[in-house]
Image 1: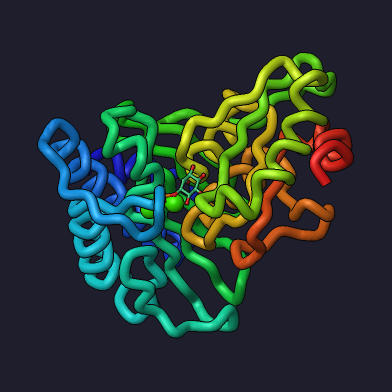
Image 2: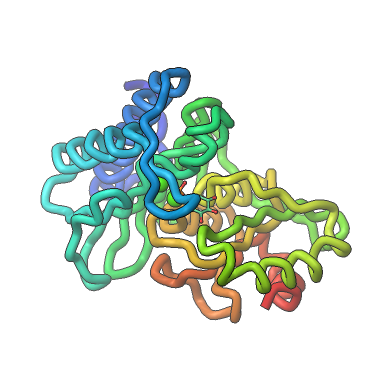
Length: 271
Ligand code: IPD
Ligand code: CA
Ligand code: CA
């Protein structure tokens, strides 16, 4: 529990501390459940041709929902596997991806995370992304900055595209989106240092926040993929918009997150 106490030094307001403690404690517990099941055989169900769900996604979500309801009662929860909340953007709302990067998890590729965000009338208040296999806890509180474990994080200062490492993702709707995916790749790949498709959007955004990536873009995402990472990037000094350059909301399907310095150049290439 020292780890939770340490995280609370990020903010001073009691309400923020309650939310942050709830989100960090919940993410760490769900992450340890996922880690324990990583080496076990998985039961895989298909939600679409290539869109998987395992029994671990469901178990992690149940644990998260129970934990948030106990630690921060009365706040509705929108979570990927149950989609239980009827809350609107006018209300306070937890947005949860119990296991972002399920395909990686199912294939024994250790890049995946738990993602938990708290929105207040559409504005992100708390964002936590926990990568259990590296034991990396990324967290941010609105107006207070962002951290990875006990260290403050910030985006890179790279302003030359050719020095930039950029992340992306491929939507599950492959046929419908392939022409755009290819066109963006064709525009970007010759001009940047390299592109990564690591397979967990929430963690990709955390990687932009801590400077391992200079930018990240993907289309057709859901609120639980982006809500926490959105705040991490902003609080680490980065910029997050839609593909048209409009202000981002987790209810926007397209996201471009960057270190701010590269934003305009990346926007021109992917839009
Ligand atoms: C997926 C991952 C992936 C992204 C997909 C998401 P899931 O989330 O974030 O990187 O490309 O669009 O749906 O299904 O593993 O929670
Ligand atoms: Ca996801
Ligand atoms: Ca998921």
